Length: 518
Image 1 (tube, one colour):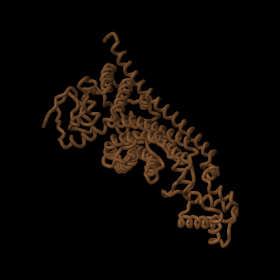
Image 2 (cartoon, one colour; image 1 turned 45 degrees about the horizontal axis):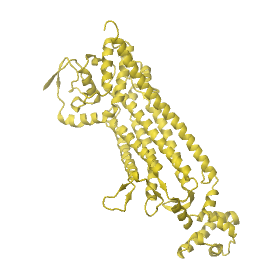
Image 3 (cartoon, helix red, strand yellow; image 1 turned 45 degrees about the vertical axis):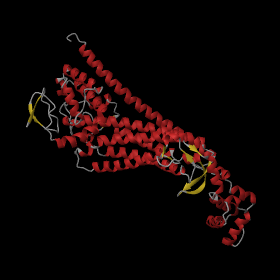
Image 4 (cartoon, rainbow, N blue to C red; image 1 turned 90 degrees about the horizontal axis):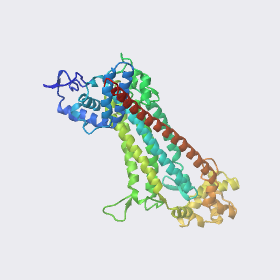
């Protein structure tokens, strides 16, 4: 067996064959298979947690100094080394042979101060990791919220711009009824606002401090959990010590909220990709969001929209694996260790998708003449004509529906457009269905086939007419403003707390070293 000579007698909890301390001659030597698989994967996934773990270590040390557990001299030495490590110095090169990120940090600190022996006082390594994970995830959640709000503002701006631009609405990819492109676009900010509301609720649950829990049932050492929460800008505590350390539902909820938001954006992206085809020819993406075919010079591929779909599919798979990883007995490491990397990566991907969609929307060109021409030349006015018949004649809607259906079938068979049809054509269809003509006034018939009149008639709440559309634009804008206020406040609070923690730590170290005895 190999042996290791060091400067303290620290043996990392949970990896008895990895020696990270000094002073004792202890057996070491994890197998290369373990190093190259479990250690390498764990370390790689935890790198994203470095800043959060660093803040957790600083706060833990400060709290124990204030509690009188760590002697002032050792505390100052440890804080000084932690501050240096917080900057991720060039000589800090984590390697899987040293274990996970926590133990790599210990190795670096141990080479600089014997006070590193106090770092693990009253806590397991997973407390530092779990606290760092929550700090990291809350930061990613706020960035994701910001990106979603940016996409929401782009949606509202374009919906406002195209509020009167006529087009056919589509169901089953078939022209359905007359609407405006603005009304179509405004169908997406509402679920986006719900997504941000879900993010707010998720943030409130994520931003609960697990720090000071010891291992799973508290610590014999005096620990001020509220002080730790204050130093790290948590809104409160994860109360139960064991629950605080082993929460499988948090990662599942995080991925679920992210996927719900991406599916909303993906539905829009899928529509726009269809609208951008030569067959639909309704929209054109900005050049910067497309990619040319290497072999086919005529093609302008909507690559940005394809990426949105692919990323959404990928994160759907990540959600499934997150659920599977949570299905373990309590207190098992495998429901966390793989997620330390997966969850931050997923949120980073989701943030990128939201930012990308904001850019796509801003640069998007809608071909209004094409859309209006297609609406006028199609049969999307059929429902309005049937409803007009019901209102004008008192005929039940099902009978009116059958008459207009017959009218459309005859027009298609004779290759005529709906705008070319006459009252006589309508009466001919009515004769087949009712054995009598309808004799609808010419002016009423013409107005029923006018797309602009049809849209203007949709005055109900949620409709495409100018008044309800303006009300919805205002409502969505107000909702975005409220969410933006929350996001900025939460971001500023976390950023200010981090700066305050670093200032306090530096001040403590400077004051200690400025004492006459030093």
